[in-house]
Image 1 (cartoon, rainbow, N blue to C red):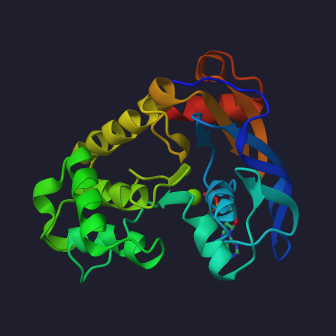
Image 2: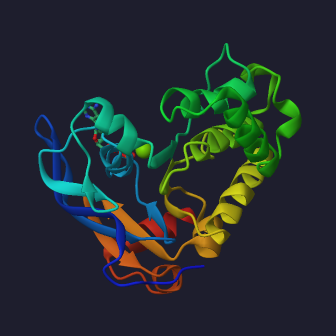
Length: 249
Ligand code: ADP
Ligand code: MG
């Protein structure tokens, strides 16, 4: 699903460090994600995966190092940040839909407010996206009327409506009932096949095997392994990765 073009990093983290007080949560992180690449990030709870995602679209500051999206460093604040942040779509564990807005409004809000799209244009795009993730019929409803799996697919459509260059997913299926996990993963696999650049934090090893170009294993704020899924799952190098994988079985 990827054409690897060396040096063509769409997302680039260089010697990134972050502390929360005394806690060193990101330790000298170097990570390059090329256009069209799907990188799955796994690791024990507390290893810094969410902080990494949040740092990439500046929901968190970093202490030193640099993060660039398509060659541009994220500005600290203001309009420039909103614009560049639109390049980075984010889907969280909790769907975070606006509870008092319809599904359609949830998807059109960003394009209208941030991108200056007309209502008609935004609605046309939104309907196409909602159809694509299989919830077109839910457009006039409120989020609470949808199942968790449907809401998460709306959250994906909402992020896609901004036409991001990269999509970040932070445990997008962890809050879902088991029977709804696959309908969300299927949408993600489809996106990967269509060439979307993706960074996905997940415990769904089936997704990693099926869709990942690379598996990044984090522990204690460090990237411990960065391998193809085949290599990582059959031949983990570090004792921490071996230990982590053995606990999944
Ligand atoms: P993961 O997503 O891998 O479970 P996180 O990035 O959420 O890990 O957290 C990494 C570490 O940073 C954990 O020890 C967590 O308790 C701590 N942490 C996360 N957010 C904050 C915060 N806002 N303030 C202080 N500590 C935090
Ligand atoms: Mg997390």
